[in-house]
Length: 259
Length: 318
Ligand SMILES: [Fe+2]
Image 1 (cartoon, helix red, strand yellow):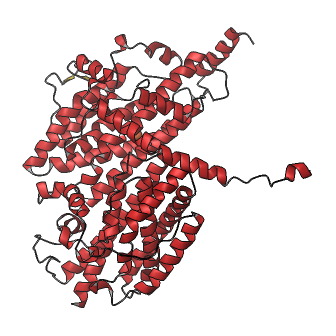
Image 2 (image 1 turned 60 degrees about the vertical axis):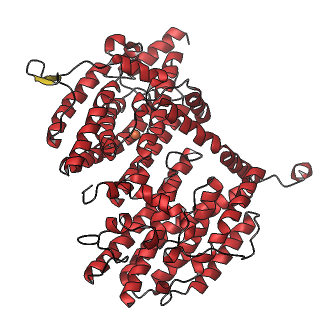
Image 3 (image 1 turned 180 degrees about the vertical axis):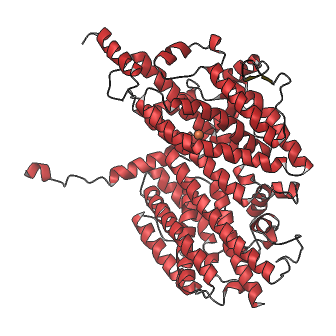
């Protein structure tokens, strides 16, 4: 049981990175200016790389303990990163709802990235410093270097847009209204994450960082309010089904093939 | 100095293989030709992101997804180097981009064909990047310094792309019956448009002669095209696939492959804007640019605000 919940936790980390990476990759070729097209693609690449590391590790753990598929359905043969990414359905994905929210305009993409990078920054730091599983701590340490850059990049953009023109500010406020209700879930522990992680601590650090950057961006820090939850346990928004339809198309249309 | 002397010094430099640099005197037509060619090349990199980019979210494995993302990102980088090279000739990136959007500037017609299956991503890497490389290797020695130096950087990455494309097809060619069919179909569709990438026959090409004299180009369209056919006709054997040309045959006498005639009606039609995706490609670029306007304005406004300001009254006090 304990091992199961550790596997779930690893999958949760992988799903977060994959789904946000997927969203960011939708910008590739369509960014507002070439340099930023490259930057958002870079972040997407980092996140997909992180997802691969977590999936590979989860697959290894699952193969070792001869685990049934997390959804109780056999996928055939050994687990691999691709089977975990491409052959699970919406209810088995464990990413936070924030990661699957649509790109919207550049303001919404930036704010989603800022909220998430801030979360990943403190989360990975805690994993690196105090998680007893060496492999997970090592992946977190490697990812932390990348996330440090994502956090800096997205913070700079939050400030630039918040304190830019009247229009950019209006768009940031709109993005804030859309995304804020999805931030609460980040800190509500799922059953599989309670034992090792101190989410309360992460929440405090997250809030402080967001307050600091918002104040520089002249943006208001909202009251906590009603928050959506469910992503961590597979209760997603309708967005995820469409993401998976696209993401998984090839593996579903041509099963059991090498690519 | 009289114009004739300047022109002589210029041509002597070119003949002596000395690169022309931004501050050097150059004939107006040389400047214009370079601006046209470099910006057309830059636009091709950027528009070229679209047909491949639309498979990023559908790539069949995480590894392929990461490789494709990195590849399309490289193309954006190539666009950046080339826009910078064009800027050294006195044209702004914004102006160059406006010319693309107004239809005044062209980009390579190959990107007006649709990517229908995953195998197209392999075929583009292998054939389209393969054709581009032959052109670009030549351009590493082009006479305008900034263009040549941009090409050296680009060529390294491009040959990597070609190998990745070939590898995609290689895996398909060893795969299931459906994958093999997908592979052959993509080769069938991309072969002729790839041959068209080298442009019209030398006898029909309007700018060629002067460009050769100025060493902007060093090989003719037909020469490059023949090099390409010779290369690909061998590589396709490794895949166990066929090129869709009955006339393709090794010629002992010429030591080259003979090949069939290109459908030039199709070529000119796509150039004129009637290709399958001309409209979509240009619309996608315009949309990205227009929707990014407020972002660029906000960034500029913010940079202006944070500029170190002269303290109030400092000037008066001095
Ligand atoms: Fe390129």
